Image 1 (cartoon, rainbow, N blue to C red):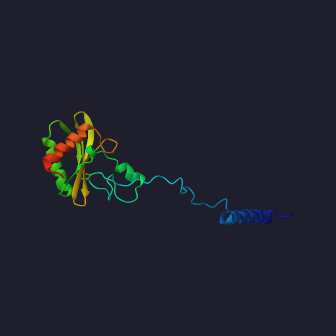
Image 2: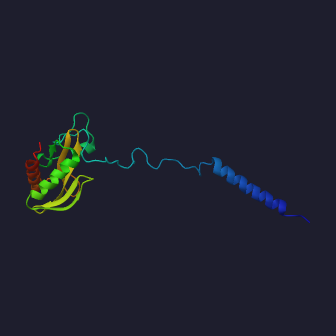
Image 3: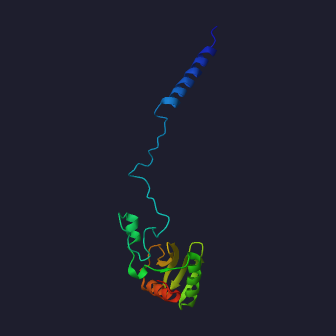
Length: 168
């Protein structure tokens, strides 16, 4: 009588051998890193709206300009903001007091860590942002989409704040 044990051992050894060869060198099982090619790589967004090379007046920096710099520097003169000689935290406190003195301003929220006031003024909602700058800080307005505010009320509020705190 013949035993089927050697045949099953040969079959198991064959399956293991084929599996080992397939896993070690077969290109079907290899993973490549071609998920994102240079053309389909996701868009990288800068961490801050105000670029390091941009002046407080919103003028574009000298030299080559990228798409993100073009959008950021496309501010109108009315919403460009103003400069203060104090550091950001001191400027934030002074702007907070000045906002309290301006009639018609309703502060919905304030975030000192971010340097942002969420407020409404003359029926418009926008943000007043206090940023650190090379020589102190800058104050500007942003609409709810975090782009420079172009409303007339934002320009009026900036002018009132600039007068109240003695901005440049």
